[in-house]
Amino acid sequence: MNKKATKTAGILGGMGPEATARFFELIIKNTAAAVDQEHLRIIIYNFPQIPDRTRAVLYGGENPVPWMVTGLKVLEKAGAELVAIPCLTAHYFLPELRRRSRLPLLDLVAETVRWTTSSLPGLKTVGLLATEGTVATRIFHKAFARRRVRLLEPSAAGQKKIMEAIYGRKGIKAGFTGSGPARLLQEAARELINRGTEAIIAGCTEIPLVLKPDRLPLPLIDPMNIGARALIVKAGGRVREQPLP
Amino acid sequence: MNKKATKTAGILGGMGPEATARFFELIIKNTAAAVDQEHLRIIIYNFPQIPDRTRAVLYGGENPVPWMVTGLKVLEKAGAELVAIPCLTAHYFLPELRRRSRLPLLDLVAETVRWTTSSLPGLKTVGLLATEGTVATRIFHKAFARRRVRLLEPSAAGQKKIMEAIYGRKGIKAGFTGSGPARLLQEAARELINRGTEAIIAGCTEIPLVLKPDRLPLPLIDPMNIGARALIVKAGGRVREQPLP
Image (cartoon, rainbow over all chains, first blue to last red; front, side):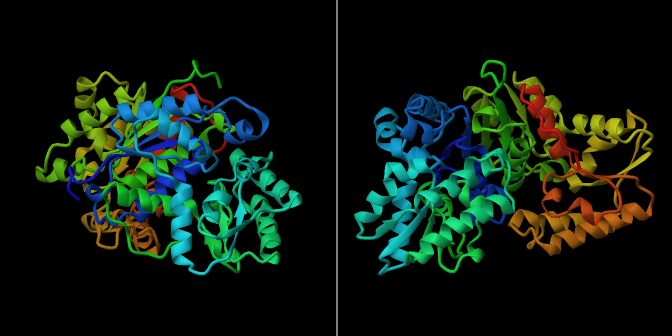
């Protein structure tokens, strides 16, 4: 890999930190490299003080945009040439971030829709497991609707289980990545399957930390893996040939 | 966690990328935080183009110091206030790096010796699994000798197995973290155990990626875990109470 031919990738992280670490790992695992030197230059700003995105979207919590703009400035100063944000709810703010930063920002929602519709042609219905914030933003609904794919969201009961799995006292954000949150997410997925979904989007960066594809009878689409591969390509790196989940 | 009370931690990474990702994960896992906002601000520069440290120490390969200084400048510009380098062989160059950068640099070798001698009082002999480069630098030998602990290094045959596990065509740096490299490392460890070592230092950042403590009949000391906890403390964060490996 020629140093000049590749761009320095930036990651605006900390939303949450676990998801940021996993995204970094996915970039490394998806890069075709036999020695260290063939990997990409990456600058990560883990900035967990950025106010909660779900709270901002749903409950009038503090606006995270000025914090994210500060984070993007740090990445720009450090030499990042394109940036990914491993938090899907944060993508609601992408148009505003694009107005306020010169850095090219990868759109993980758009990349996910592109990958899904080209890999599963003829797909009519896709289910979404995500935070209340992401569901409320309707970012996935709108992006899939443009490709004439209908998005199924969980019932109120299913959504409650997802939130408990992510934000609960024994949830993923509190460091629990065992069977407790996994069971809750499987129950929410089961409901979507019974209602006829043909694939499921792991629409929150925390979900694939505990929900594994082999526990589901249909494709589990991971926007983080798709995003990691898209970032490698856009930075000029070489993607490892392997099937996406 | 008060924003002003904590420092922004920096990680000079990419040596190798997998070890950097794991070190980042260890910081997150070892931080006492119930919500994202209680985690530390961290800037990571994954800079895998830094020339191989082992090659520089042993075979007159390109000097990595100017590259590492460039990396430290990137971290400084981005606002890092103290820096850890998750590559033990790179610690050979720490005195020179300290002369050429104003950033406080965490010494993972010193932290490891401090933790080991205080956690295992009366320890007489410790074994080292590390790259040829780290063994040749004698950084662990010297640091343990100061505390009157004797360091055992593997025989030439054992060392060859370690290098194959790390650098081999099916080694850790090529993305293989399964039973192949694990078996080679266990054989090298077995030799040190037979020669009377009382504990083993996982002296290369890649080793704990495949060698698990429960496969050994004595303590496996992981400088990366010790370093992650030391970095949290020095940055003003709260360490999660749990036993170190």
